[in-house]
Length: 215
Image 1 (cartoon, one colour):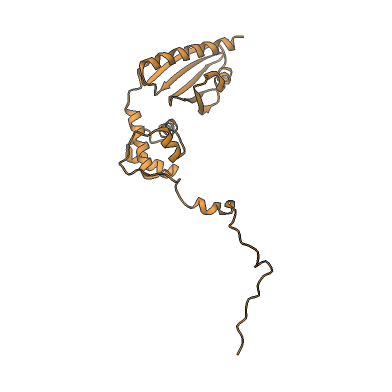
Image 2 (image 1 turned 120 degrees about the horizontal axis):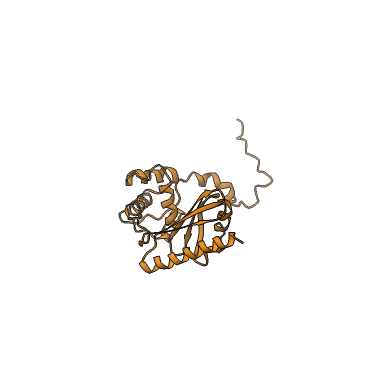
């Protein structure tokens, strides 16, 4: 009879075993699926705070509105928008439906009347090229302490910025050679007093830009 061969122990077998570094597990983590999200025990809702959205989806309210609005689903219904968010951004079903409801609520709200508590519009023709005006408007310091961050930018054409009060402004530039038309659309402003304050803010800011380029 032959004896069962016993595997020789390696010279390193008596060393302590440590768990692999997290970097070696990256592939496995990627396969885990959607971003971890807290799923509330209630029906989907359009009333989502920016804090809830950032924690559970990684993006803020104005970012999700921008994503849906810029997509091919901007005029779609809730189910189609939710499916788009699930498929393209790996958003969990409850959150996808809630973001869809939030977008629909925003889309159906009136936005076309200047000076309402929904959208403020301000415009000015500035005697400078659009690239020159854009370079000034692209500076964060010009917007003061309420500035939050730049959400989107298209060189010499458009800027989308957010503020600490959860409002959003889109600045569009149209070039006319040596001059530029600047249109500001500031959304989600609540209350007439805030509209007045923002009206003054944009009027002064555009005057400041015009003065700066004329030096």
